[in-house]
Length: 317
Image 1: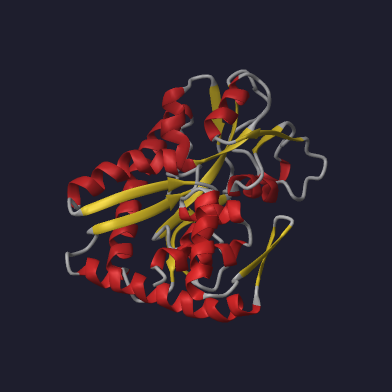
Image 2: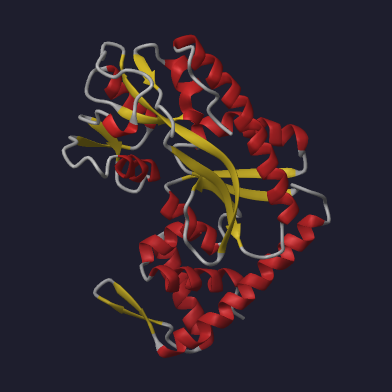
């Protein structure tokens, strides 16, 4: 008899059409995935995929069976979620994904509060760029993700959490930028960017899209902390989301955080999950908790920035 795991492995492979990427999605090795697909084919007595010089192509019977596999997997997920609800809100297992420009700033507060308020919850976290998180949400290896809007997938629903404004960061010795900074005369020369795949990079490029003369610098950095280290050493400037201000300000005193004049550029943060009626109470409770944490961070950030600049307004709303 074929197993649910084998169906899940085949679904991941059919979606990705790449053994390495599919194996990563379902958290097994590539040889193990290949062996399980071969065993599935043996039990069904048919060939589901064609392998041709590394390319993966579904056979006709593979395409015909795929919708049925997906229906079975969806039904199993629904049964699991219904069973979890019997134990109350935020109980059982919750697998949450966060983008790298949110995780270091939300998780230190979110994890202990979840443990304290919801002791029946097993909280699992994964940090990755948006594209990877969306793929894992689709595969069922994540229950929800926290990321920036927009994510344009018809099968995803979302709840907006808070608006996160941007600040320009320069070295302490950089006295060219004056706060508040007008977007239309912003000096974006030597603007440091995160590597490809990070939504913060895209947001920075969007802010600069009308300024083709800008000298954008891509060092392939994967974290804001790395970019800020570069900024502190006079290598350029970068954008900092408001959610990061308290943590990054405490860690370093060698940077200047320069605010924008209204309208302040910002990103909208939301909780994303698969469409459907299940776990609504869980997602609502989680959304409210994240908003609570964001308000606390906002107060801390406003105090920090007010000390540096008495005209700074509260950041998150």
